Image 1 (cartoon, rainbow, N blue to C red):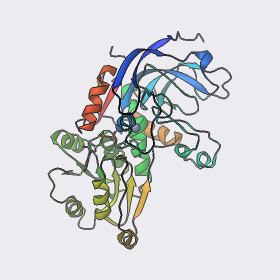
Image 2 (image 1 turned 180 degrees about the horizontal axis):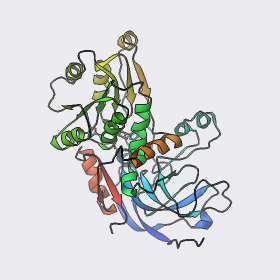
Image 3 (image 1 turned 90 degrees about the vertical axis):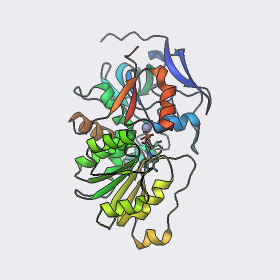
Image 4 (image 1 turned 60 degrees about the vertical axis):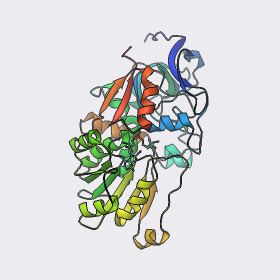
Length: 359
Ligand code: 8ID
Ligand code: ZN
C-alpha cells in the first residue's frame, strides 16, 4: 500500500505553561514515519471532543500537572497514515479509522494491566497530558491502544464516546445497580453527564438528572431522565432526591460535576447499601464522608477512572448501535479558547467537537 503524504508542519493548539493562553500555531512539526518508535502510529485527525479535563490540564489545577509545552485533547478520531517500522502484531493497519482516548498507552504486562486496570499502569501514557494530544491535525499514538471505529459511526459522533462515553459507561457498570434502581447524575447536562443518562437507560435504570438551566433541562429530559432537579433552584437537593425515590434515597450516584458539594449531598441521599461513583475531578479538594454513616448505611465509595481497551470497545459498540448519541456542536480549532471559557462558565449542554474538516 502506498504511504499517504505526511506534511512536515501542522496547525495545533499549544499551551506554553500551566495557565498560559492557548496559541493556535501553524509551525508545529509532524512526526515523520522514521521518527516513530515501534508500536506507534501516526493518525490524521478528523475531529476531537473537548473535555473538561483538557481545561484542568491547561489551568494546572490538579495535584498532578501536565507536560509543558502541551498540546491537549484526548477524544480524537481519524485515520492511521503511518505505522512505525518494526511494529509487531499490530491489530490495526494504515487506512483504518481509529479513536484516541485518554489512555494512550500502557505496558500490558504489569499487574494493573493484567487485571484489566490498564489506566492504572505505572507506565501509562496519557493523551494531552503526558504526551501531546488531539488538538492538532496529526497525533502520535500506539497501535495496541487506539480504538477501532465502526464504519456506521461518523467520526464527530464517535469522538466524545472515547473519553466522556467510556468513563461514564464504566462508572455505571461498576455502580452495583440493577434494572429499576435509581441512579442520580449530578452534572447530567454536561459532556459526561448527558452520555451517562443514556448509558444508564440502556441498563434499565431510573435516572435523576441534576444540573441547571433550561437548555440542560430540555436535553436531559429528551435523553430520558425520569426526574430533573435544578441545583440552583432546589432548596434542598437531598430532600428532593429522597422524595423522588419514595423516601429511601437512590441506589447510586455518578458524580460528574466539577465542584465538591454534590459529593457530600450524594452521601446523604444514597439509600443503605448505596454506591457513590467518584468521577468529576474538582481541583485539589478532599471528599468528606461521615465515618459513622458510611458504616451504618454500608455505603460504597468507588473512584472510577476512564476505562480500559475493552470498556472503550463496548462503549463505542453501544453508540454504533444508535443507543447512545453524543449531543454536540462542531467548531474549528480557533474556537478552542472560547470553548474553554464556556466550559468554565457551565454554558455547554453536551459537548463541543473540534472538526478539522471545517477549514
Ligand atoms: O476518569 C474520570 N474520572 C474522568 C474522565 C473524564 C472527565 C473525569 N473527568 C472529569 C473532568 O475532569 C471534570 O472534572 O469529570 C468532570 C466533568 O467533565 P465534563 O463532563 O467534560 O464537564 P462539563 O461538560 O463541564 O460538565 C460538568 C457539569 O457539571 C455541572 C455543570 O453545570 C456542567 O453541566 N455542575 C456543576 I460545575 N456544579 C453542579 C452541581 N452542584 C453541577 N451539576 C449538579 N450539581
Ligand atoms: Zn476527558
